[in-house]
Amino acid sequence: MNKRGQAALEYLMTYGWALIVIAIVVGVLIFIVSSPAGGVVCSSSDPAKILFKSSNILAGAALTTPASTTAVINIQNATGGAIGTVHVSAATGNFSATGEIISTSTTGTADTDITTVVSGGNMYIMPEYSADIASAATILGSYTFTYNDQFGYAKSAVITCQGKVA
Image (cartoon, rainbow, N blue to C red):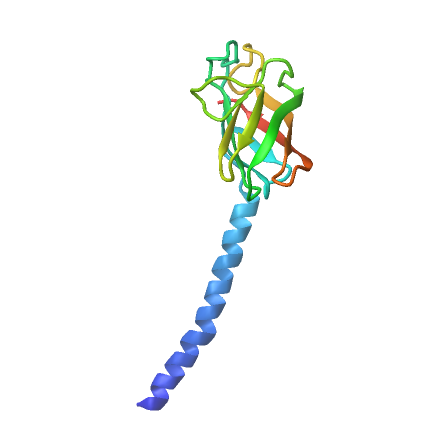
């Protein structure tokens, strides 16, 4: 009886690990090869410090007034400390460099600069882009995001957005 138990355990250990490795490889390949079904996807050039969380960029939803929050790019301070003198500038592509708004809330007052963002705190960019962007149009643009880290050093990250508008 003991020999059959040992043989069964050896069988499970040998082939079980092989099946786990195969499942991991297949999962990684599916994750790498698959592309998003649609929508505008944004990314950060330094995700370890400035983490992109979500975006909501829609057709015909141009930012026209500071109270308009129909288009929002949500990013998070992941530096591990408070950051200050946060500024968004140097827009490229479909984004305008004149009317973007940065704020610590989507419903609060609009700022052009943020004085302090605590560690883990969210920041919101309300981008300005043309209202004539139609559904299924391709967006490609970026913002240069500058800030002072917790030690006072000037840092920057680029938030890039691209994809088809829903």
